[in-house]
Image (tube, rainbow, N blue to C red; front, side, top):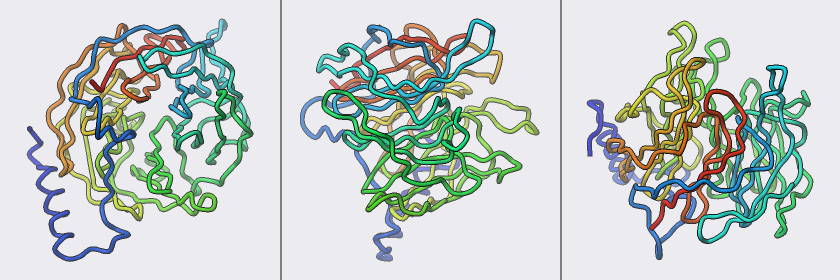
Length: 365
């Protein structure tokens, strides 16, 4: 598989080999994960998708929302939608639909509400517990925090608990988070006047939310990139660069090894995206990354229908991206969730925010 001239795979492999020889401390050893579901038996991902199916719509139109699979349900949280007067309104509603084995969904229901209306949120889950990481809230004191709530077997949310704040000056907006080994991880990119760096955050969840470890590893701001964690490595794919560089959407991909203590190694350039892309999503399924949608300009472009995949090697190297079955219609500012053998794409926009569509495609066969 091809890699860039900077040879991300060689650099990562040398680092891991040297660690094995030197007997590195376990706390700083690279993380490894087979993906959200370890499908050792049964259907496996091979980097391809079936054609996308259009499922029944969500109860509300929404974009810039977050979504998770939790407790047997597909759950969408917050987001915003266009108003008749030309503005936007944020949503506090949390909707849940039962996940069926054939990739369809049961009826949507109101699961609860977020602490206040929110957009640009980030969410992850650990079984039936949902973690809501930051976002732009209507309630000024609700942002800059990590919240958690449990989803019961009926698809109803319990009360939200504020676990603790993010580090001062750090915001996690329209990003990626995950839970692994009893710790919460998230990605963030700071504006030039705030630090001009992209970083990874880690906090223990043992006995509550521990202090965050911030690891600055990629110089420069990235606006609305596609973040990913895969096989012990973190990746920043695309996004747009800061105004002094022209607010240009890029196709660049950077990756680096992530250790168990939350520190990140030096970044290396991997093979670029098929096209400059921001406001899309990247989802890790076993050994593959799947890029879904996005757009090629901050304001002018419509949502893309592009879906492409690349294999993540054990060394962290990425192969070239291969086009997969396209979305029925272009999407941007949507949410993509892996649940069982299927990828689900909810809401987002095409030429404006706020759609109620739900697409599904089988990714494990």
